Amino acid sequence: MNRMFYALLLLLPLAASAADFSKVQADKSSVTFVSKQMSVPVEGAFKKFSADVHINPAKPEKGSAKVEIDLAGIDAGGEEANDEVKGKAWFDVAAYPKASFVLTSIKAQGGGKYEAAGKLSLKGKTADIHVPCTMKEEKGVLGIDGGFVLKRLDYGIGSGSWGDTSVVADEVQVKFHLVVK
Amino acid sequence: MKQVLAYTKTAIVLHWGIALLIIVAFPLGVVMHEMAFSPDKLRMMSYHKWIGVTVFLLVLVRIIWRWLHKPAPMTATMPAWQQKAAAATHILMYVLMVAIPLSGWLMSSAKGFQTVYLGVLPLPDLLGKDKALGGQLAELHEALNFTLLALFVLHVAAALKHHLIDRDDTLTRMLPLLNRRKK
Image 1 (tube, rainbow over the protein chains, first blue to last red):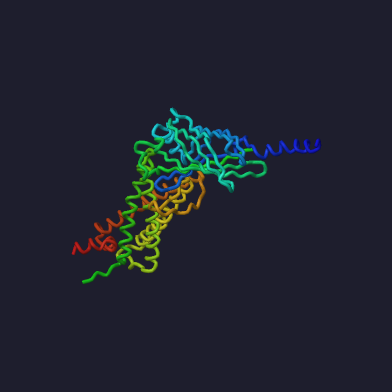
Image 2: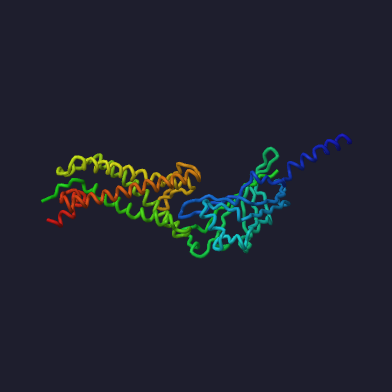
């Protein structure tokens, strides 16, 4: 009886470390996006962000996640674009320096796939979004990959003459890759 | 009487078609380069690239066509040095008409913008995104263009000189309409 108790005690931290992931490896994680300009896919990235994640892939519904993006760190694909998108017609970084995503629910769908939902706050507007994602555990590190289509005009991103979606498409594909220990 | 053409009709149509496209693309390139970042600038950049790709394709057709259909020799009254200078100018213009769109395409790739022909057909990126290389290719693209502009001025001036001063058939070889009207 005693021996079994100690054996279980030894296994406990092991089980815990394999289940809960909460240390986001910022240098290995990324939030990127692809916009379409005149039908040309242009890659961009949000280079400054912080992510607070507590997740157990086996019991995801108990997890929590919050990603906060510092919009001044945007790379829209070129210097001219970077200056432009920080302005009022786009992100208006001076008035709305941050965007955030807060997880509200996540359900396992089997095969490493998950359906997450949460609130996206951007340029003073908050909306519910669905984010399909995958989680893969390897050598004690959890890789979370997901993405969603952001309709920029719903948030007033790129207004005025930039509202012409034949030049810059409304749909922006946002992708993230989080590495969590 | 049916005219005997120095150049085939196909060669003539290609010459003037390509000339027209270049005459549109060149100022478009200069203007869009100076413009502030805007939807119009993005539009113009795409149009400029589409025209450039079209010129590139037509020039290839034209070179193959010329190789298969040799034009008649230049006007016999032209001194040998002028004939050599004209031939050299023509060869250099062909080289530039191929090299300029190529440099633009490579520049676009290096700057991280793929070329999507007519907004439909994506051309492969032969180069990855490289800011420094993009800047160098932009300078090359500009230098090649201004070299072509200089040759274009020389080409037009020579054609006019032959037509108005020498009064030979140099211009009408490529512009038979002018000949017919005169007769």
